[in-house]
Image 1: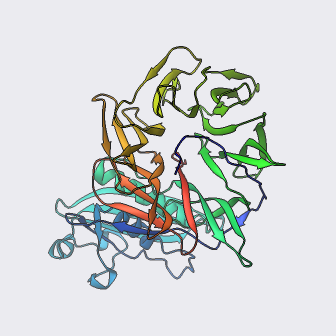
Image 2 (image 1 turned 120 degrees about the vertical axis):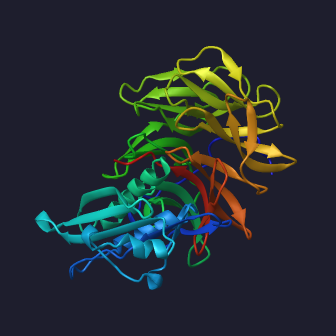
Image 3 (image 1 turned 45 degrees about the vertical axis):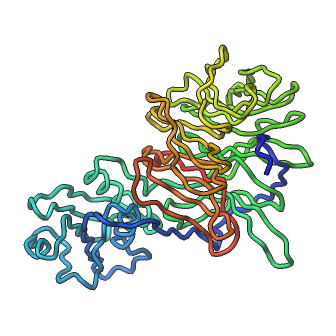
Length: 431
């Protein structure tokens, strides 16, 4: 496979909104030895007909990280819903470290109120006791946010259960036609939404920092172009449609600018577009291929892939242009780089002994550690808490997604029951 980088492939967009049938199925990979026992008791619903099992969603979120082992409901000797009904000695005898109880009651305006409490079983403390309002349609999101709060209280790291993932699938339809679809789904694979569907490839989805927009590359009338699409209204704006390559869009940290790769003046170079004034600034000017820009967390500079040194490597340049600095020197291929939210690391695709793996460059130590183990791993994207990287890989001959903690531990594999999955992009925190 030729890995010289060209950031756009012809696309033809057909706008289709609505829920897609196929959703991501998540499988925890690796052992769960040492996982912390936690009991999430079924929430009392007082006879309400709920569309979602809130406590089951919370338990699944926590278990999926590999850091917690949720107690099966069949093993629970009691199902208290209020703090005054809890006897922590019972849960201590069952070996539980933490306990979550709660209830869903009718709220104002036809909605619900979710009351929950998190206990430290051994210390006998109430760690969290909160009430969360929710609509009927928002119960799943409310459950994810409760799981986020519990996860952060127990680990010190913000949870990412209430975030979303954008990804591209290829699905064969009746008659043998293959459609490529850009989707957005919850972090657990539920509630997939089709954003764009096409008989041609779709590439390079990129989130805005507020999580309301996605930029992507399309090809209509046989001409590549970059669009920015609002996920709520469905409105899309054409932002780049020059002769040649229009690709690799990346939002600035404040959402006001879009970095991209254009070849309108010859070789592919990095440009930055002001999304309000539509002023376009050229950042690099070199005869080599400069592509795949990504912003630093503070917006002061960009990193990008270039073969100006003879092989694809990662370089750094100010967001207004200026001198270019090479960042990677290990291995003969490094590309598709992006910063961790705290700016300490860069995730990238690196070639090791002929295999394309996901790497993590520690900027202080100037050392790249390999995170993945496939032979064609690509498109890495940090979770918004910086604790995991999601990427595209192959499993049993099919394209799937995988997520791995950057500091070791249990990973996840995300796949559909049919078709290929690739090009993941993890959303920012959604508040």
